[in-house]
Length: 506
Image (cartoon, rainbow, N blue to C red; front, side, top):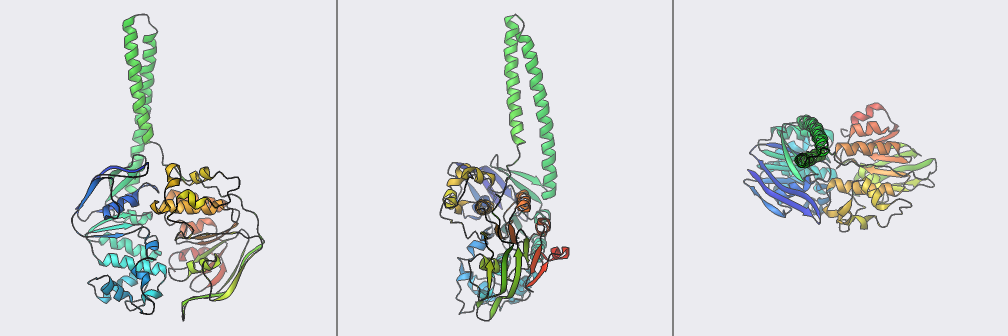
């Protein structure tokens, strides 16, 4: 039903896709994998008709629904957020009237329950939903379209764990085709029948049958085979070369001609070995080292009875109070819509609280990482986005290089970067600032598993104070949290191991 024919795509001098040829049949469940920045989102956009390839074509029969990786950013600009709060349009009216879906309200209510929004129904007012809840409504819209092909770019990024688990089961039983990109390995191992691996070194796609775990085993076997081939080629080249040297040392012209041919043969085998070795080159990984920040006062932050109302009578935060001391790691734990991001934005000075107050200690210098990339200017280049930083003795280009932002990428406009590339740029920008307090709102969202691990190790070594929002239980566990704020109870406590079970679930 989908045919990708010799598709090539580049940005400036940077090749992203080269002569991609792929086929997707009816009902197939395909996982598209590759490192951050390899071009996965670009390929999905080309299939969905959002981007035009430089060369090649796409042919498709049937209906298609596409979930963008950056739905959180796009949602700010589309109908779901432009609805006038005074009109009080409901979720049901938005889906049935605005989007033209032929569904009953009970179907909407059922999916809201599956999305861990059982406190809402089709009559709930759209404008009163949090950003995360609006994303769930958009995902519900896409699922209710029941298209022949679902194209999902990181569908679990902004879902809590129960919603993500339900979505996995839904995709397993979905009767039509699915093409999905996800760093959530549970998604890639559940119901996926084929893996498309986008090799960023060759800008091409390799096809493997089976799920993600089976793909990793096949890659491991392939690598073992390449190592054996390489060693055999190196031994062969050495043997031919030694034989050629012996012949060359003899006097006759006939033997010297044989030697020349053997030297030429040895060189060809060496070239083959070089090509084999290139296939074994590992993908580049981030090398994060957060510069040591200056010390702050012992009491870093004091929050006293903060509340926040977006609409009169609808409180997102009611009575939040807590304290954080120097070098502590503090986590805010709770489901979508309880005010985690709102609280971070207040503390970062991006929002004004309705009541209460907070105060930063002496010598604090606060850096804020927003899951919506609020500090990145999409219409400027990478370098233009970091010009204003006080880099001190840090070399700007080499520091960006540690985050795999290299070469022509620095001259790209931020809006052309993938989600993973934007995340790495935002992290580079905040870490270069030598902040002694980091407010981090879902910093792992677009990172592949290796990059998540590298970020975790860097944050564990960081000498400042961390205030974290994350839906990844293992990331929270391994970071070594000292204190927590449980939402929506707004309960402040020292960390207990049992709280890990609440990350992304509450």
